[in-house]
Length: 463
Image 1 (cartoon, rainbow, N blue to C red):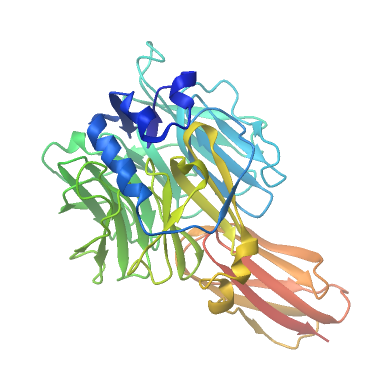
Image 2 (cartoon, helix red, strand yellow):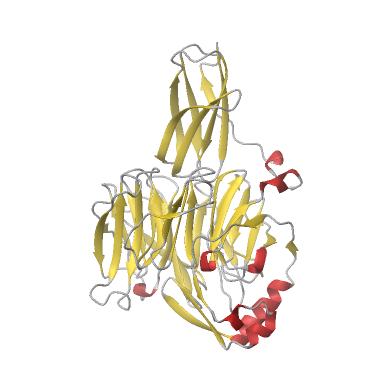
C-alpha cells in the first residue's frame, strides 16, 4: 500500500487533527487502485486509532532512513544482511544491519513492489512501469542476478503489472498480477507462463496481493477490491490450475499457513468495518470471519517465533500482535504513528520494519526480558542429531512449516561459527544436513536454523 499526502512544510507539522482538517482528501494507492477518503473518514480514523487500547512499550526503534521514497518490502536473512524495495526504483541492500544501504538495481525508475532472495547472490526483483512513467512501454520488468547485484539480466513482461513474487525452490516460482493473473516459472525465472486461474466475474479488476505455498503442490493467492469483495485462489497441483472463491467483502492482503488445514487470511478497510481475519480449519474449503474492530489494513503476517505474530497495519500507523495465531490481538503503537507495510524477523531477537517515505525500524529486543510474550515462554523447536555423541560426522534433522529461504549455521561452544551447512530455499517438511568434523576439536557443537519466521536449535557432542 502506498500513501500520498501533503508534503509542504505546513502539511509536515505534527498538528494532529488540526493538520488533518486543513487537508480535504487523502489519496491511498493500493496495488494500482486509487481511492479517495473524504476528510471526515480520515479524521474518524485518527480519533479511533488514538483511543485504541494499545501497548506503549517501545518495541521498535527508528533507524536513519536510507531514502525518502515509500518502501513496500523488507527481507533480512540474518541480523546484518537485508534488502528493501519500494517506489521510484528503490532496491537497496545492507550488510551491516541497516547502518548503511546501497542501491543495487541501477537504472530502475518504476515501483519495485517485491523481490525474492533465493540466496544472498541469487535474487529476483520485479519492477512495473506505467504509461505515465514510460510512454513507450507498459508492463513488468523481471530482474535476475546470480552475483548479488553486480550484473543483472532483465526480462520484459508486456501489459501485465505483477505485484508479488515468490519461489518454493530454486527453480519454481510464481508472480501475482494486478489484473487477476498468475504466472509460473520452472527454470529459476528465465521464462514465465501464465497459468489457468479459472473464470470469475470481472476478474481483471482483482489485483493479487500475495501468493504463498504450504508445500510444492498446495498454495493460495489472495486478491480483491475495496468495498466489493475479497477472493482467495487455491491450487493443489503445483500452481497449474487454480479455483477462486469469494470469501469477504473487502480485499485480502495476505495468507499464512499455520499448517495444511489451519489457514489465516488478512483483510482490511479504512472506511467502514476495519481490519479483520478469515480463518479456515479445513484447508481453505470454508472460512470464518473474525472482526477486530481495529481500523487499518493488515498488509502481511510476520512471525517472530512460532506463536508470536506481528501484522503492520498500513496507514493506521500501528501494528497488531498475537501470541495465539490470531485468536486475540494486541495493538502496538509506533514512533510517530507512521504508516508501515512490511516486517522481517530473521531471528527471534532481530526484526526490521519499513513504511511510508523511507521509514525504517529495528525491533527492540531488550524488551524481551520483561515481555510476557517473550521467547522465554515460547521454547524453540529442537533439531535432532544422529549419531550423538559422534566421531567423524553427524546428521541434523529439522522440520519447516512452510517454504522459505533457510540458513543452517554451525557454532562451537564459545559461539564461533564453524560452518554454514545450508543457505537457500527449502520446501515445507523434514530436511537433513550432514556435518563432517574434519579434525575439529572435541566438544559441544550447536546448529542454528533460521527461515525468516522461526529459529531452531540443535546440539551434538563431538568425542
